[in-house]
Amino acid sequence: MDLPEKVILFTGVTSGIGLVLVERIACQFEKTHQLHFCVTCRNMNKGKSLEKMLAINHESVQVTLIKVDIGDVKSILEGCNKIRKRFSKMDCMYLNAGIMPVKSFNWKNILKSCLLDLNAVEMFRTGYGMFNTTQLVNDDGINEVFATNVLGHYVLVQEMIPLLEANAQKKLSQIIWTTSANATKDAYNPNDLTCKLGPNAYSNSKYVMEATSIELNERYNSKGIYSQIADPGTAITSLTLGILPMWIWYIFLPILWMVRLLLPNLTLTPYNACQSLLWLLQQCPEDLDPGSRYCSQTSLLKGNYTVQKKIDITPGEANSIYNKVSVIAEELLSKYT
Image 1 (cartoon, rainbow, N blue to C red):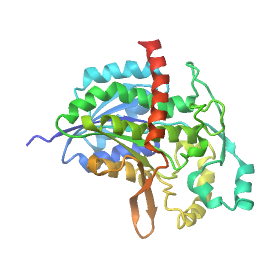
Image 2 (tube, rainbow, N blue to C red):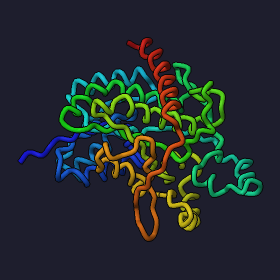
Image 3 (cartoon, rainbow, N blue to C red):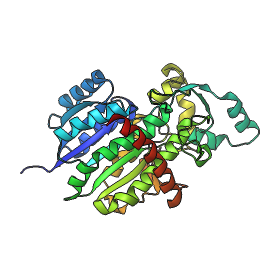
Image 4 (tube, helix red, strand yellow):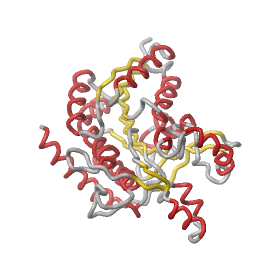
C-alpha cells in the first residue's frame, strides 16, 4: 500500500534544535508517511551533512536542499521560485531560523534583578534583559534580527501560500513558528517596529512574530491554513555558545539541573527543546489555540511534555502589527520583483 505523502519545509535545521527536530520527525512519521523534507539553508555544506545523516538513518525520507538566506528577501524569492517548480503542495512549514547577536551578559541588569527587584527567577525563565546585543543593519537598511526572525519568514510564508492552499484542498496545512519566552510586549515600540533604536531587538522580533502568526490564522483559516507557535524553552545551542564556550556551560550544568526543579522550561538539550515543535505536528490544527504558545518543558517526574500559555496580544494588536510587517515586505518585494 502506498503511504500518504507529507511535504515539510524547514528553515534553521542544519544545527541545534532544528537538526534534532528533523531527526525526531523522521523517526515519528517514516512508517506512516512518505516524507519529503524541503530544507532551506544558507550554508549548503551543512545542508549536505543533514542530507547524508538522513540518508544513513532514514532511507525512505527524501530531501531537497534549497539555498536560501532567510534574512535576505532577494535570496528568499530566488529560493521560492525553485521550491514552486519542485513541489505542487506543502503540508507544513517549520519556521525555526533565528539570530540573536549577543555581545555579553548585562551584569548591571542581572545584579539589579537579583538584589533590588528580586525578580531573578523571571529573568532566568525568559532571559529578558540578561544580554547586551549587537545592532546590525542589512543591505536593505533593516535590523538584521528583525529581517531574519520576522520579515524573511513572513515573505517566505506569503510566497508559499499557493502550495499550502493546494494541500488544504485535501487536508489542513500547518505553519509552525519557533518563538521564545524572551518575547515580551515591553520590548515592542509601535513607532520602531524593526527595533532600530531599542536595545531588545530579539525580544521585539519574537513578539512581532507571535502577532504575525496570530493574524495569519485570522486571514487564512478559512482556506485550511493554520499557524501555531512553539516555545522550545532554554537549551544550549549555537545561540548560547555565542555567549559562553561549551566547556563553561558543562561546568554550569549541575546548577542548571537544580534550577530546572523551579523552571521546567529550562530544557537544556535540543532533544528536550523540540518536544513542543514535534507535538504540534501530531495535533489536529483546528483543536489548537492560535493565541497561545505551546511550550516545551521537562522534569524528572514527567519527562518531556508540552504546556499551553496564553500570549498577551489582542486581535487588534495582532492585526496592526501584521499590517506594518506587510508594508515593509511590500516595499522590499517591489524592489526585487
